Length: 124
Image 1: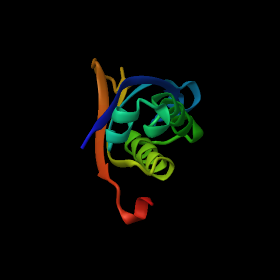
Image 2: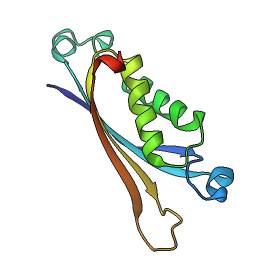
Image 3: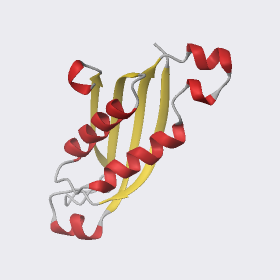
């Protein structure tokens, strides 16, 4: 299967269990690996035959900012579910959602979750 990748999309959102995270917000980094058949696009060289990377980025930002989640696990799963509903050509999605400098009282580069899901009948 072919793959479209978007790495470290910056999205300012309001996720976390600490009250300050919900009121102040913070930057999140979203990386996506999406399996999709790109054979037609590769032959036609026409954007209508692929998935628009700009649209994907806008949609991820919209989903990440639509609701405040306690857990980045929930935010990541909602991104996956939205993308499956919106882009029928995507058959598999892996998302890496990073929370840089997560406020946990420890020095760390980021905390993150990685989810991977395949399209199923419940996604359609």
